[in-house]
Amino acid sequence: MTDVAALAELIRADDAARGRTISRLGYFCAPFRPASGPFSDRVIKIYRALPDADALDRLASAHDDYVAALLGAGVPMPETSFHLVPLDGARVPVIVQQALPETALMRPLMQSAPRDETLAMLQAAGEVIARFWHAVQDEEMRIGFHPSIRNFAIVDGRAVFFDTFPPLIHYSRAEMGRLLLQFSDKRLMRIVGPLLQRRVTAIQDEWYSPPETLVGLVGSACRLRPEHADAYLDWGREFARAEMRPWADAAQAGLDAPPRLPGYWTGFRRLLGLQGEPNV
Image (cartoon, rainbow, N blue to C red):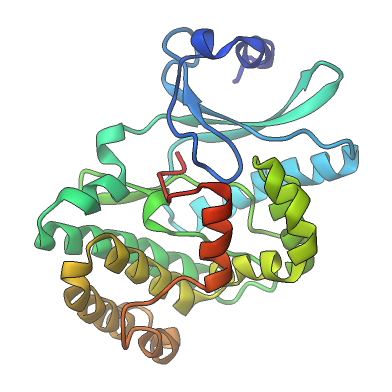
């Protein structure tokens, strides 16, 4: 059971008292891990408060449902909880998550490991992707998944997924597009984004498409290690045939060449100073 009062005190503390910020380049927040105290084995993720109480309650309910859906679909995850923490007259969304070893984060491992080890990591992540989509393919509700390399850790050869925000469940496409702006940690995005709402909304489409999640994984690998791109493309095509047959044709069509990010998204990333660091 999370001590919400202690969590509120931790949030009020200055950066030095909180502990080390793990990444300052996330789209929604800068997660940190306390150096000591009751949360020293946790990563804390603090999001923007909203004035709409009903929207916050819906967000909390959706997050609980999403974590349950991911676990129900066989997605390995660290223990994760969502809280609306009373703070200075507002309720602040906070995720508390069991910390994973920084040495296990998939992105830096992919950058430094030999080719065969990176292929084994892709296989581990691909198995999670396939397992998820097979588990939910008959669901009537709208549910998505964002299994990018930066959202996985590799623990004892197994891919562990740790990104649960925003909760990709229940919200319509238009609603999710608005969430991407409302909860952006970047003020510039909240100012400029509404002028480009259609393109911001399109960012999410890959997350709701089984073949595109696999193509996105392979594309990230190709960008990280272009010298191994041919091996990654071969792996992706074979994996689609063997493990994702309902979506194999669409996935293979996206793997004829190294997949590229849409121009509007790379433009947003440059605008916001995002470099694809792990969203721990």
